[in-house]
Image 1 (tube, rainbow, N blue to C red):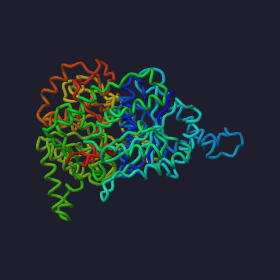
Image 2 (tube, rainbow, N blue to C red):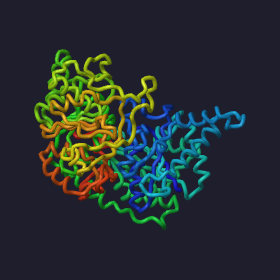
Image 3 (cartoon, rainbow, N blue to C red):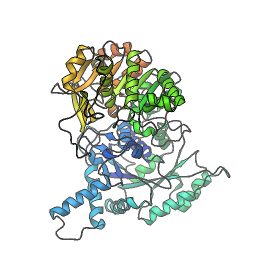
Image 4 (cartoon, helix red, strand yellow):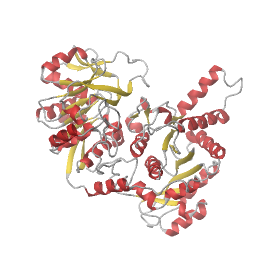
Length: 603
C-alpha cells in the first residue's frame, strides 16, 4: 500500500478536501485503484451531532456513518463507496484506546498519548486503507489521507506525531506528503509573498514531516522567481511546486494538477512511475468544457434554514449541478431563508418578506431539503403549498417530504392543526411521528441511518420511470421521524399517492401528487449518491420538469435499461444513466473564482 498525505498550512479553508479528491482522481486516471481517509482532529466521535453552521453538511455513507463533507467530495470525484472507518476523529481514537484500557489490554501500563494514541492512529490508518471501496476485491494501490485543520493546531499534534512515525515505518517510496499552503498577494505591493508558506513548512519540518510537493493556493499562477525562492527555502524541488490558482469551478483542479505534472512527482515519490499509465482525463475535460459554456439558466429556489452557510447543503447543490449539466442548463440557485416566507416576517421586516417571496415565485422549480428543529417550518409549508397550488415543480427531501404531507393534510383534508410530533408533541392530528426504534435520550448515531431499500409500489408513477422502471431502489437515510402510517388511507383517498415504501409496507418513502406536473417528496437523501456521469434520478427529474423536458426524460427513462443510483442492482437491469459525456462533478467555486470546499453558486 502506498500513502499520499495532504496537509494544510497558514489558514484553514484552502481547499485541502478538493485537492485531496483531485489528487485521487488524477492517480485513478493513471490506472491505479485509490481509496481515501479523512482525519478530523475534533473530539466528537463523528459529525452526526454537529450543527451545519459549525461544520457544514453531515454526509451519510452506505453503512450509516455520519461523516465530514469531504468524504462526499471523495465519493463523487472517485466514484467510490467509503465506510465510517474512512473518517478518523480524535473522539474515535480515544474511545477505542479507553475501551482497551478498561478491558485491561495494556497489561498494567500507564496509557499515554505516545505510544498508545499514536499507535492506535497508525493501526486505524492501515486497517481503513485496506478496505475495498471501488466494488472490486482486495485493497487499493494508493490511499490518499487528508489531515484536517492547519499545521500548528494543538488538537492535531497526536496525528502529526503518528504520521511522522508512520512515514518512517512504511519507508521512502511508500509515502508522499503534499502540503497545501497560501501564497498571498498584497494589494499594496502586488507581489506574491512566500513568507507564510516558508513558516508553515518550517513548522511542518519541525514536527518531523518533510513535504515532497507544495501545492500553493494563489489568485494567479506563481512566478518562476517565486517558485525558485520557495524551492530554496522549503527544500522542495521547483518542479514539485504546483500552483492551485483561482479557477471558475473546481473541476479544473485535477486538470491543473495534470498540466503541472503533479502526478509525475507523486508517482516518482511512490516508486510507481514504471507501473502507472499517462493520466486519461478525456471525459473529465469534456465535462469541464461543457459546464464552462452553459448559458441557458434553470432557476431553483432552495428553501432552507441553514442558507447562511452554503456548505450546509453541499451534496444537494452538487446533485442539482450534475442534473442541470446533464440537461445542458446553467444552474442558478435562489437561496430562500424559510422563516422569511412567514407572516411574522411580513410584520417585522416587510422588505425581506417581499424579497423572499419574489425569489420563490421567480424560480422554475422549488426544492425543500432536510433539516432539524422547528425554525422555518411554517415557511417551508408555505413554499410547498405555493408549489402545489401553482403547479411549480417541487422536490422535498426528508423533512421536505414531511412538511409536504403536513401541508396537504391542513389544506386538502382540512385538518388545520395537523403537525409533526417533532414540532408539536401534543398535536391531535400527528401526520409525522417519532419512529419506534429511535432514542429520545441519546442523539449520536440513533437515527435511521444509511442505505435502505425502498420498494416502488406503483409501476407507472414518475419516480419509478425516473429510476428506469425499477421495482426497488437503495438510497441513504438520516431521520428520526416518519409519516404516520395510520393516516395514509385518508391522505391517499384525498389524492396523494405513496408510491414508495419500505419492505414492511408501513414506512412511507416516496410520495407523489399524480395530478401535479412534478410534485415528489422522499424520506431518503438521493443527493448522497449523485455522481458525475450518474446524476440522481430524482434531481434529474426536478431539473427536467423545471425546464420543460420532463416528458422526454420519462419516455427515455422507460426505454433505457438501468439500475439504480450509482450502479446498484434494482432487481431488473443495470443503470448506467445516459453516459453521453455531458455530466459534471463538483460545484463552481465562490463568486470570485476561488475554490473553497467547492461551495458557492451563481446568484
